[in-house]
Length: 162
Image (tube, rainbow, N blue to C red):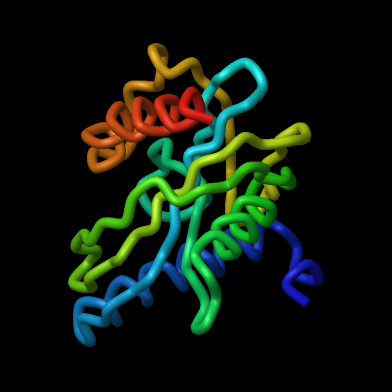
């Protein structure tokens, strides 16, 4: 249904909805369940995205976990929606809790390899790119910048154990 809305109007609606969602979280202080995907291409590069709303910094793809949805299934779904690619060999890397605009966000960090040529959807995702782990962009979100090195090391160590 949302595909019937022209992409520029959809992006504007996402920006407005995002601001309203942040306000609601500050008032309600809910507990959220989400996922982030640390995905590697065949060359071992990490895929990061810029959303069309929010801070516009580079982030990992991901999103909310639906009620009753399993974290790995949610991560694969969100990854496919945002990049148009399939996440293969998905596995849970870590679960952490972090504050998010008044809410508590329980984040399931999932890692895997992706198959296909990633493309931003032009609606939620404004841009995406792959970077070597040693050459990640300087404008990562601050929380991601603080944690991604450890996640990459953990993900790569897990791959060599197999």
